[in-house]
Length: 380
Ligand SMILES: *Cc1c(COP(=O)(O)O)cnc(C)c1O
Image 1 (cartoon, rainbow, N blue to C red):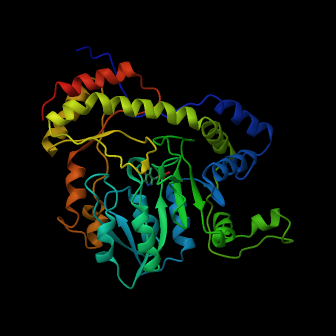
Image 2 (cartoon, rainbow, N blue to C red):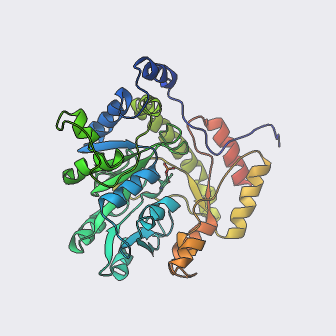
Image 3 (cartoon, rainbow, N blue to C red):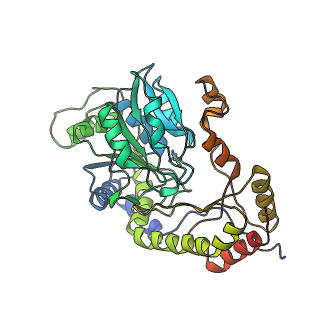
């Protein structure tokens, strides 16, 4: 085979207006946070998702840190999180002294297994942080009433799920708060960036304070106080308006971006079905009541060995595929919180066997055909 073809795993999407908007941010003479583009991006998200308040942040990690501050998480509190997630989902709460309690995944969607929640709560449990893996919604119709009965707050880590829906409702609108990522590996990006979605109106004002170094600067700008001063804990979580300019350009192109991703996703899915079923390979499962956000396409191979072999064969043909999370309960930090092998058998197993295929908006069906051809000649 030709080795001249090179297919990247990810390439950040370019919508078209990014550079013009950056220029405009300079022309506005406002390139720090909360300028024209930040406000426009927040408004667009609030309107589209029907969320009372969206605050842009410097990352999803920082939005999660804000959520932990807003929930007044204290040392000794427990937070229920999936083991199969990105490290920030845990770290944001651990930074406040909380203990992460790891929940195993469902074998079908790879989302947190809601049936395991009752056996994991304790009097110290404060919050549950579902992540909508691959942009496919968690079982919110079970998680919501469970959280309510047990007085737990819900923070959705929606880094994968922007514009996805569960039972007709946008992901990110179920919990008291939700967090988005605009890192370059996500569907919509400004390089590094994020957002906190606030669905509980009672915490909006404090969120503005925490994001503005613990000051009441937002109230000052609204003319509600004469001077601004230090009123609470806080940090600096505002992105530059230059980043917001990039973000707005991409958010305005969201329908195009998502449409392309849908087509690419369905192409992999259709063309790999028969190979997958012949070879005991599991393809992504999307329940009927989920409209997914088309964040990734993955295979679950029958074994670690098969996964490694296929990854290597693809690499030799210039195709970069990657695996995803190592289960947090088995990480160095996770073990310090009591994680042991066997605690989350599904997460452990899928982590060994999952392979993410190249998936980004500059793929074409021709390039996908090349990937598919290499996969089809592989028998695990
Ligand atoms: C990407 C990602 C994050 C972190 O996003 P940043 O914007 O890089 O901080 C957090 N959680 C999940 C599930 C992610 O995929």
